[in-house]
Length: 466
Image (cartoon, rainbow, N blue to C red; front, side):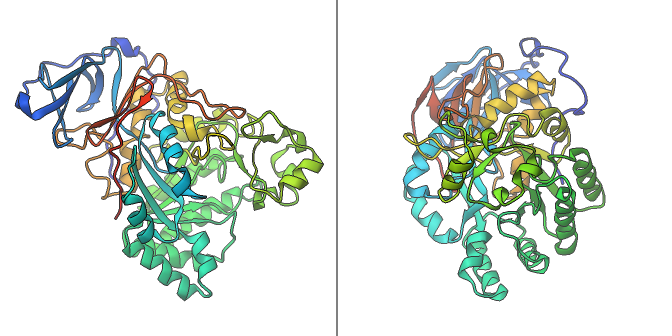
């Protein structure tokens, strides 16, 4: 997979952000009257080094870099970091998107996200989705994959299902997605979907088949075999919660070897040590206490302080209630931290806030990216490395439709996130997931300010479709 290499991931961050070197003077050739906004005084990882320079945005929403740039509006961001806008490659808002998307996008943009791609699920009717949502105002950019789980219920045969998947790809779906743990499917059928992804040169996003200690690596092996048999680019969803919970070193070694052999296998993680999901799904089938080493009282109803017992578990099993397991079920030092040091692993939230009044969503839906940066700095992962895993690396998976995004380059699209490295952190909790992240000072989407000084401003997002 072709991508920019910033620094060796094993090298610790040995200088503070405040002491990063400034660049040599750059002579700007951009006419003053052509710039709408200049961000002045911030630091950016530009041309493979940290630099203090002006970041200009022209009237077409494109980026320019230099010293002493002039514009209609100049914003002083001294002490802040200028990053490409964060790209959530595994956003989730598929239950009732038309009535929830404004809340969903608000909590994404306040976490620094400029593009939310629903590649874990998405839509079973992508043409209609893009048409309907394209008419609505959006805070951030949006896009979806083909939702195979739903399509399988619409087609009575594999051939019929393939036709529906292909129809969605023709209508602009960014990829093909399937969740084998939630909807077990024969390998031969899954391979047909992977072949369609390869035919259209789109990624195949896969929630693996197993989440138990005994079988999880078999799920990783299956994903790699799909890449080998189909030629598709395969992305493993949230590897630390499905595939590498108990054997992350083994999972990473398998993926690393596959890529060395010429396959393209990527993965993502979210920076939390616990997962949350709906009680009705197969993860809570008989034997879940033994699989995860937890009991009823360990389960927390998200958005409240309620813990379950056998009676409430049985009652909620019939509802759409989302519960979280205890912190530490997926120890960060044995899962996420190892994955983040691999060049093929990126950040993806696997979440989204859908309701204000009934906040039953994992905190990652509101705080994944601020939490990711804070955690990376705490474990001495270079700042440029974690930024890459939130920007250019996700773009490379969904290429070429994200061309011009996720990078700081002359003429690139002005999707930007400006944050304070000293104060950035996620505030969302299991009890109260609907909280804005700290340290996100400014978010710009397609050249317009979307979030500033704690307030949502303009809606300038666009649909991203193949």
